[in-house]
Amino acid sequence: MPISAKLLRWYDIHARDLPWRSPPNSAPPDAYRVWLSEIMLQQTTVGAVRPYFAKFTDRWPTVTGLAAAEEADVMTAWAGLGYYARARNLLACARAVVGRHAGQFPSTEPELRALPGIGAYTSAAIAAIAFHRRAVVVDGNVERVVSRLFTVETPLPASRPELRRLTDTITPAARAGDFAQALMDLGSTICTPRNPSCLLCPLQAGCRATGKDPASYPRRAAKIAKPERTATTWWIECDGTVLLVRRPSSGLLGGMRALPSTLDPQSVVFEPPFLGEPIGGIVHVFTHFRLSLAIQAARLESGCNLPTDGEWWPIERLDEAGLPSVFAKVAATVLRKRNAMIDADSKTRLGSGAVAHR
Image: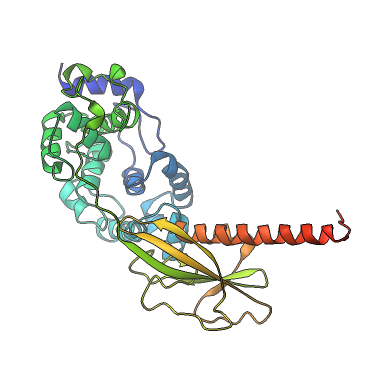
């Protein structure tokens, strides 16, 4: 029996129930939902994406609705998913679909690749899953399964052309979308990076890695240490609010609300009374570098005059600001330290004879 037939038979029984999918061997799902899920799932787990997908589709149930959204609203809704260029491309793509294709996603890979933010993988996934076209869909899970099936010795990323060619050899003409999702599910649930469940695998009999340490595939080149960067961020508080700025529309965390920082050369460096006191720092790892971010904190007793373009955001509603993860981490650090200081001060006053009132 061909690999595709074995895998599809397994998928018909074991397919994951995901909100952007249709059941196996059924009518294709809405292309908008397929596209949205594929963009969200880049470099992100299914578990992390589920609530974001629900929030986006509740708020913007169609590509036309998303195309009409304000960029700031989309960036805020995206906050926490990371790789924020994807959110900007998401909005640009939605507007292109509405402007160029009357609100209907095109069905061919070349037309899909012409849209903002859609590359070879995403165009193949949409064509196969949403339009039942034969397309070769290769993500990280598929790379792992195929590298083990054929014991590909060339390390990633150099092996990617070979892995795509091999995936092409096993992709069927019919049910290509189901086949792609079956490979993804197999990699996610059985052919996992560590401790794969080979005894449960429907492809075990034909897998060349069986008995040859499957977990050692795919081969990987030696990791290169991430570059180190340092910067300073400010927590400037006044009357229960904290100063937030809007980052430049392009570049790192483009268009997001954030605490003021020196992450960009053009960023303001505050002078007294905004200089603040050092209260520690955090470390945050981005895709291409590791950031050590020093935190300076200052409190204005009155006035709340803005030292730069920005807005005073209520601290009690900070979780609604859509801060990217690095600045959410800074805020959590500051608030944890502040609460610890308040608790310590309360204990000191109680210890000196003060009366506590409930």
